[in-house]
Image (cartoon, rainbow, N blue to C red; front, side):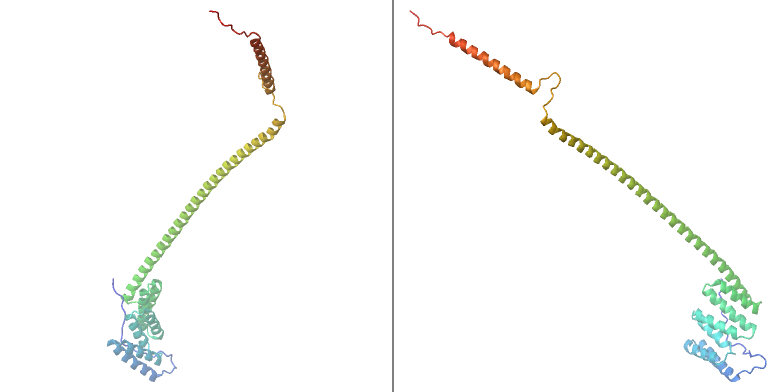
Amino acid sequence: MRRFWVFLISFFPLLALAQEGEKIDAKSLRASENLTREATRELADDDFVDAEANFRRAISKSVENPVAPYNLGNAYYTKESYGEAFGRFKEAGERAGEKPQKHQAYHNMGNVYMKQKDYQKAVEAYKEALRNNPADEETRYNLALAKEMQKKDQEQQKNDQDDEKDQQDQEQKDQQNQDQDQNQGGDQDQQEDQENQQDGDSEKEENKEGDGEKKQEQDRQPEQKDQPQQPRPNQLSPQQIQNLLQAMENEEKKVKEKLDAQKVKGAQVKAEKDW
């Protein structure tokens, strides 16, 4: 893969950007150019702090100087301060009056977008750079690469969306299965509760029936005490048995008296034997 080019130039030809009839502040422009040269030398000597300060001073001195913001943008790009670099490249492109200057500014804006993985905006920046210089092969290569990366990014986003949808569908399916299992478990528990309730009701009914029978039995018992017992078929009643026993006892008494009388009447004393 070819690396992106950052067009670090020391100076652009400083051309007048004013329309005909407008007066250019030559003194301010010269002061801005001098500060730009000094800042560029300091940047070459790795004195970034002083270089940044002088570039800023040069930018504030004159709006007709596109070199100062462009070179400061390159300095920020080298430091990977891509947000600040983009701002300076954009400023340089707006100040530039010649197509070569605009081409280089938009080319570097495209490079910043590539670093930020904003491939759609990178494509637009490279296209604008080619409008100002159609013959630049480096910009054309970067444009093709940006389009390829944009396509891959869109495919990745689509795959991520599909994966997210699949995950949501799976989670929804799992939730439905879980709800179904819970409902089945609840129905089973409810059925068991109903069966237990039915068993309890049956047991209560049996107890109720038993209590009713017991109560009926208790209700009948007082009536049995007040009324004489009815004789069973082919059996003597208790009263008859009592009368029979009494008769037998009287009969035995008579027989005994009779026997006792006979013993007294017929008793004899033995005489002594004569020898």
